[in-house]
View 1 (spheres, rainbow, N blue to C red):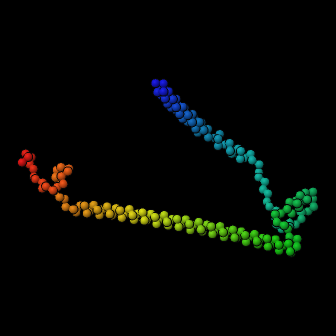
View 2 (view 1 turned 90 degrees about the vertical axis):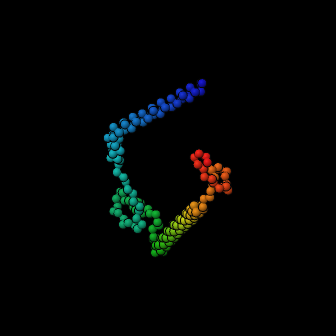
View 3 (view 1 turned 120 degrees about the vertical axis):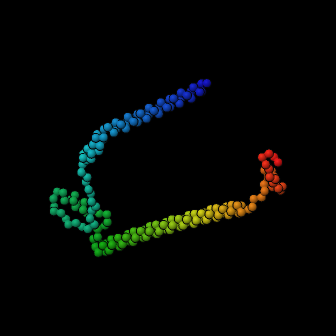
Length: 186
């Protein structure tokens, strides 16, 4: 008896808890719907208070003309001379930089060709898989149609067979001729 009561009250408690959660969620959503102006204006205020962004561009690869001498000149000159590639100082260095650039562009072209080959191979595999799926579908469909045709043919053959004189009993094999009977049993 105690277990039946426990089960009943646990079911009542669960139902009350779920109803309470539903009402609480409704209240929260209702408050959010009633106060859309406060929630919408907060991101706009945050976006207006951001300081302007500072853009730092990479240093040019060629030597820039030297700026006029002033107090900030060493800082500007240091910023313009720092580059990612070495600066050519002689024709031999210039040819070295050009050959490095040519090698790098050749590598990039090779990577692009490899990526294109991989994409083409993936496309071919995808098309081959699609052809295989289609072929399997066609074979399965043909088997189903052949089975249906065979069933229909068997039904037509059974319909053509002449029906013999069958007796009234379930175990009668129809060997004896059926006698006509009348309502009065004659």
